[in-house]
View 1 (spheres, rainbow, N blue to C red):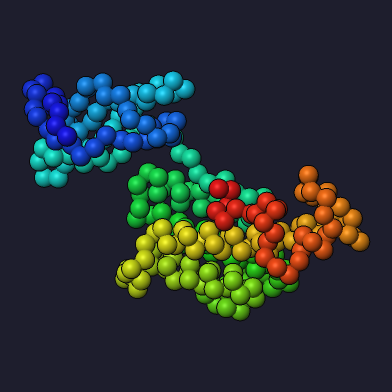
View 2 (view 1 turned 45 degrees about the vertical axis):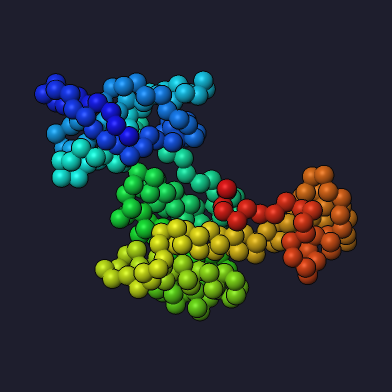
Length: 257
């Protein structure tokens, strides 16, 4: 895409840029921004463009920042500012088990949204460690100090008895370690693979904890289940050996998604 931009000295020059932003950084909705025609090329090989969100609910102005390597006139979209950060919402189950996991994960998400990709990976790995150790401590309250001192892989192999949680958490650790070490072992995997495995770990922990919570809130003897408003089913139906019943709300795979 071609346009005219103004330099610091006041002269005008023709520039090329790759694309317009497709998301408003303030209302976080998908948009085709209104171009105000105001563009400047900064001394640090950056192009800044003033844009406006077209949505009536927003209509805020923001700046699209573009970077050009080696002083060239071809610019690529780098970021939009100001940026409103929207992080994942946590399920109550996970919040109660590991509030530190929720806090660290959100900070890692914020770093990723700000394109700080060299630090968000270690942040996700740290969040995973809090989640697993807090989960294991919850199951083994008499071995807290021992669990705190274990490396995460050993903690999973020795204390995580749920096979599904064990397998996905162990793989998440492998990818998480790549984000903190000098050399990468898993060249074909990236940050999204790590996040997917953390989400699966969260999901299986939720699935393990949910029946415990429901059993505490449901009466015995097959009376109707008050924990699920609108359903009148015997307790035995809810916790049958088959997979989660299709007619009941299924817990989110992505915590709070």
